[in-house]
Length: 249
Image (cartoon, rainbow, N blue to C red; front, side):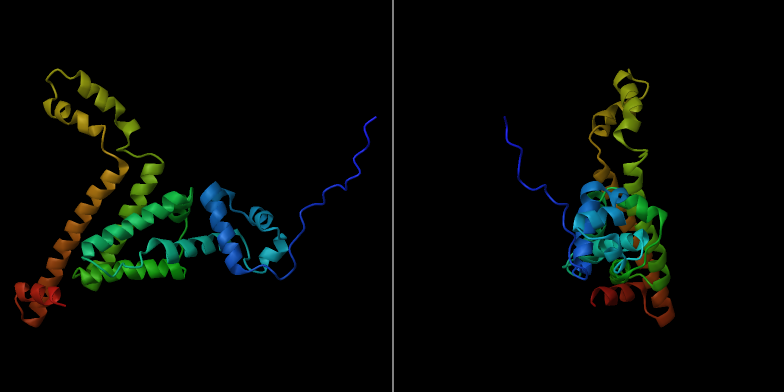
């Protein structure tokens, strides 16, 4: 006869000591959940389980899920989006690097784009990002009025492009399958479509973003020229002198 197992039954996972939970631990664990399982999985209950803490212990640091989401957004915006060398290089490259950072981090956290589209967030990390974008636009030569307008265009471009890419992208491959099929069967009725058909297959979402950024940068350059002309008119300089003075700074 087999002897009954005399080993003690494993006890439930022990709760950590009261007061031992730090804000840094909460943020790190929340980031891990959001990155690995998506924003929808980030709840007070799930985080408490991950940390081996009670929900009441968590509530000492974060009052609800909205505050928890704000912690995650702040950590990403403050530490991961803005490159440490963002002040280096031409303003055009700096804008591209900011766009790449926003896109990279949002893709790394499933559901984060939807969170940002549906709710506003203006914590320290977000304000740091906003200030950085505005500083780059100022370095491009924009005045305050044009900076404000093109800052909003930049945010709309980057977030909007990614949101469309993740949901119903009008330039996605699945949306263009029919027109590509028509192009393949075309016998001369649509020569330009037939000519570009091989390249339609190769255009990626990143390619579309790059082209949109090219157009945005051209818009900034045009606005900077308008700013220089307005400044020159106010000071009595020629537009060329105003531009030259700005570029020498």
